Length: 170
Image (spheres, rainbow, N blue to C red):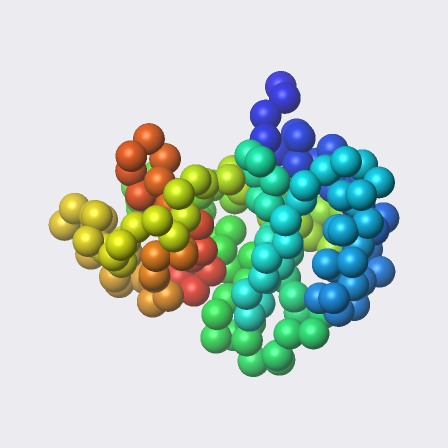
């Protein structure tokens, strides 16, 4: 089966040698840049307070910044990749997994990576995602998430899909 997780793992097998020893965000950027040049790829690097996202045409690979230059208290405040995975499992169990981009953990030599499908139209909504949910969805999201804004969701087949939900409490 050649789905986005398989393709992401193939990319990681090549990319890891360029970022495995990176201990700063700048070194991750430099490693990905060199990888892109040598392999004629266009992997984009974005980051938040606690995570790095490597974005390709159809999948995103995330990992925690805790071993880089992140603030010590950021992971507790904003959550990390493992919290996002745990919350996704919880949302699935409660019947709301469809609201969130699925996440899959893979372990490589240097760290754990978390793979998601790339969700399109992120940041194109003019409003908070809560305006696009029905009553039960809204209750679930407002009960568990607090960092929702237009850059934390996109759309799949016209429906909202939340991509950044590590701050979920349950």
